[in-house]
Length: 196
Image (cartoon, rainbow, N blue to C red; front, top):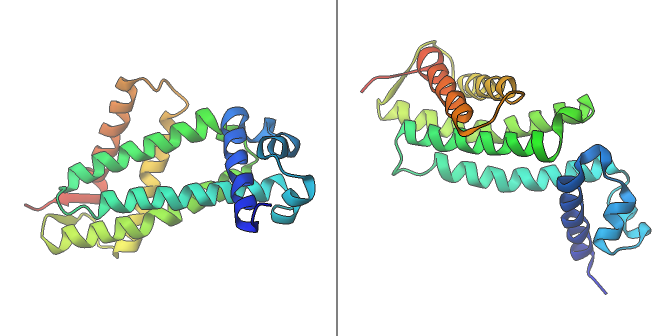
């Protein structure tokens, strides 16, 4: 017999696979239960609804995502533009998953909001640490006099707007390069300036 934590993880794994294959709206609890190989009671013991299960899947993904982002921002061998290039690559990858795999633009607005809000919440501490690092070394200066948390929020929200505006268009490698360029322009002209 599977342990409690194992059953919950089996359900989360199955839900992730089903959501990725069919998107949130087209996925059903029945599909997830069948994929997980658990009984209905076990499912509802851990997750009272598909929406709460989706939130748990997102939370688990965000934990993994946060670790990847933290590694980028805390890599002391990388310069500012190398960090931002890797960060923008991660944002583009996550955005592609959101639109193409989870069909995020078809999710109920409350789920969209929660997903965006949680993503931003996870990114801010890493961006703040990066800003502090480069300000401390004199490699950057602020165009506007704001605390690092506010500046990090503006930076991440600006990137988010660029991605979501462009995401509804062609996402060829050339289009991704255009997105990156817009983000670097935003970074350079409106948020940060190099001082070295």
